[in-house]
Image: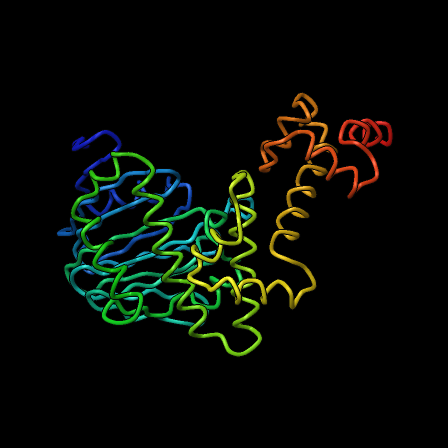
Length: 316
């Protein structure tokens, strides 16, 4: 029976048949095997905080596999991080295999077949994020999937100790979403650094630009979204941030304004959003002043927001 340590934190011990049945019923089902099935045991602690799943696994040697037959093409992709805390193991996806020792981690994505394995008694932390909660595309994740990331150097030396302590103290996630936000931020920083390390020349600049734009899009609701805040978030000088956008023929503030207006126009055209007042839609994307929004919208689209919505309805 599950043992409730704190609200939302479950601790359960499984035999191999019990765990195989549980994994088969998981939203992202997979298969498990063990070299000594009769003696296999796994203790699993699991909790979910702000959409992020945290799982600590202490287990005998085993392997898991997720094949195309288990992949639901309509499911939302998730990024999965596996950190080895004791023992050794591997993560395999596509044509790569990450060999993992204590303090190493690897990432992979849920919608492509993968295998994981531990050849000795082990302890690991597995963290699963909605893909759209991070500033990376699936192509970005594919490029670093099943690549060993060391916790002994670089940004990994900062992130791995934090995750290791978190695995021991999962109950801390019960204090609210701030802990999950810290994890998302640290892991995003780690993966961003690893992607930049593997990129070269123009691709490195393009990667940073995509990450910045993705972050901006996720924070459009913040009226205080400014170039200063963006530069701080990405550890960039304002001069470098401005240059990044100027190369593409737009200012940072202009990009934010265009994106906000585009999102508002999209919702005004959407019949499922017809019950929302124009002011409510504009606030959703960071326009605190309705009059300023109306002027900006008319300048961009040639009609007031209300008229634009009416014309969209009449066109069907």
